[in-house]
Length: 219
Length: 315
Image 1 (cartoon, rainbow over the protein chains, first blue to last red):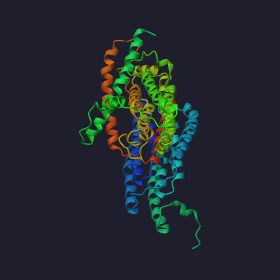
Image 2: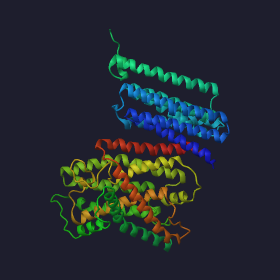
Image 3: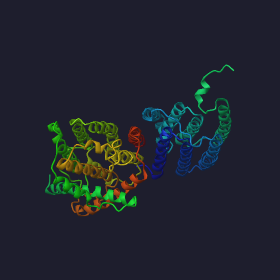
Image 4: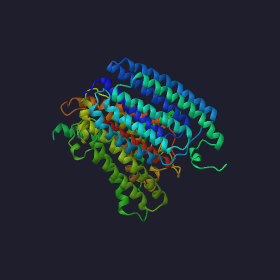
């Protein structure tokens, strides 16, 4: 019988996985941002629980950092971006959600098998959840591949970062503080630059569809 | 097989047959209240059955024997399904006859017969209904199977009585798998019982109906049997949900006296379940028919993920 806290961590890991699937199936841009915020919140809770269970105080700091960055700051930035680009009610035409989801299941099975040998040598309290974290990374990849608009791709990128963070917590009790701060800064700068990019893309093509970037233009 | 087991089995079948229309009436009543209507009253399904049984049955000229046999097959399947789902006691002599997989098979047999009968007469509506029913069914059945497998994985058995016993007796543990399966089960039940996001039970609008289109050619006692079977199906699904998620109060094999308390417990749980169903139906809008595969694929996906998570986390 596992201890209760460990079960709670497992539960939040499962919620993360469900949110990753929900993001794949979500058509509306605004709902995607809400889902991303929720994912951040789940991540914060899971990290705080691991910190509580293992007594490692630096994990509390990283949970607080995650909260400030991924629940408050980045969603606020995304909301501002959506307002400025005026894509608030944008609905992305997605082709064949059931097929994408079945591909997602295959990815989950692959990730679970991949994580088994790694989790067996780990001594972390949340080692069982490493497979889920890897699956979330792959699902975010899938989301970036299947989406054609710019904002959902950026959200896919951000959710991949969330999943990587969770993988680090699950496998090795969290990364060193310097690394975490560095990554946080990178993500923040990344989202700012991508925001500018989106304006440029729209300026050039009158649309946020990335597929326009694939064509070479003569002028 | 003990005498007590036989008694609880008989009691369970009788309860299902008597209470199923009442459950349907309760759901309809709650729906009416939520929509600020007076409602037809709790006993309306009984009145409907009484009326239909006293009417003459009209069968189309070209109908084959299958058309006449289908209502009896469907009714028999649903009654048997209600008999093997533990609602009052886990000491059921009939239960080893059919496990969770066979239960899904029973629902499938009923579906095949009702669809064949709908196509038998050769009207366009019947064919349309049969196609749509199959469209719903081919995705809903695997999802239901996966939901039951989730519970089987936790209790290491596909026998429904064993599942209920082990779920009722386990220590307090969080199973993320059961949460996933619960959401999936709710979605599948809504689809299978022709409830609002998928089908509207109150409609006779030609373009949207599924269940009503199937039974358009039936009348009299045949229609009564099919309506009764539909309410039995709703009852069976509610009882599966109760057995998986709220198994407390169902009498165990070694505590026969609990049977006395099992009946009020079941009534209470079904009443709450009916209210929840009515609320779900009121807050959701009916989907386009082409969205239904997406809805059910999501249910299937949730159930499969639940199973995978269960496998990963409990090594």
